[in-house]
Length: 477
Image 1 (cartoon, one colour):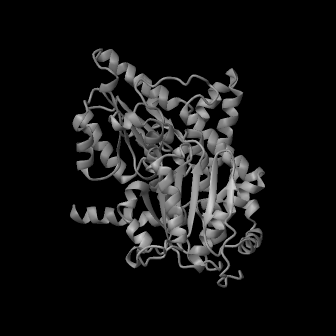
Image 2 (image 1 turned 45 degrees about the vertical axis):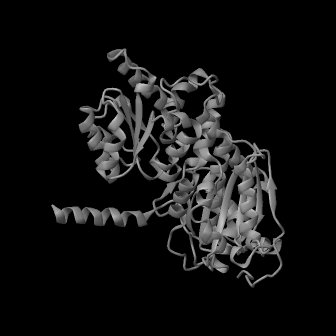
Image 3 (image 1 turned 60 degrees about the horizontal axis):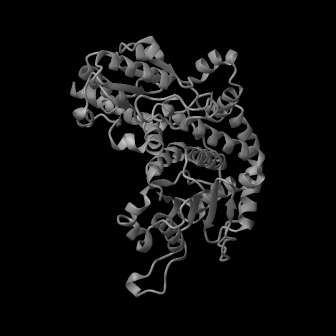
């Protein structure tokens, strides 16, 4: 059992830094001695072997007898791109669908222009229909890679079951110059299928539709052409599908979609994949990085189980990464929101994750963070590319205010402090760094799951809502 008695000694102010990011811990009482205790526990849980299984594509999702393919996918995709030989092209395209989304969309755009030569780039809209992992990841990448197209409504997303969302989004669209990308691993997700039916009725045919799915036969039921169905692997979980063609679907920006300048990681999506892959390499070969990830996971478990900090806010001070907290919310809460393992001494599993764009949050719920009575901890993400920016200054300031408080003010203005805070500073704001950061978060989540003794790759809790909604619909019928 861990010796988790209260330690009044402050933390050792743990700092990790490499050429991509800098991390600083503002967590009081989580000392190097506590870290060592958790590390011994991790060894007993065979953490290293579990990581090796994940990286090598072995079965880690035991409840569904599946591997979790995203790390192995990153490695093999990088290997294939590096080889880039003629004889590998056919295998590469069939196995990874690399560039297939881009090729399919380009074909549809060309056909639109043939039919209507007067159509220009600004007249063509790409609408992605999807929810959960088919929405959070693509939306994040679209905002990060091609913000102008998102703002100008060349790239749109429709997620839910309320028909008002679809009607609002297509209000400015023309049905003969709109391309739909329908992303669904099962192609049975209720919200996605309802929206698909609306879109098909509005369009009049499935000619301008592309399906990205692990279930091609289901897509064919909706009259999708075989050439417009892109298959993804069934063992890439929805919340990890950002690395697959589902993520790639939103990683192109302008229309027409141009080929990258270089075949070797020329596109932003390729750079994103490479960043994730470099993170995977660091996890297995860089002891300091491995200790950093363990520090994040161990402190999460400690705060949640022994300090009563079961709520964590994630704040991005990078505008183009404003949707990162939403992505992290799904990643962590779907992965770690599981029943406790009765054989584990850690009975509190996943934390409640909420957050948003930091500057906006400051004028929303920071009042509660600074002076409220809730037990909360925080993750703050910023870029140090421009250290003179207001956003950078705010991220640094609030990291210290949350953790240290401010007592040199009037009584009514005093800040609580003692809010455990993780500060992540990216050296550059680019697709490579984003890939590295997201993979870092995945590894943090996986190690936390190992410590808790739970499976981070299933999500049976989601099914109850689907089952009872269908019962409700049958009653109404």
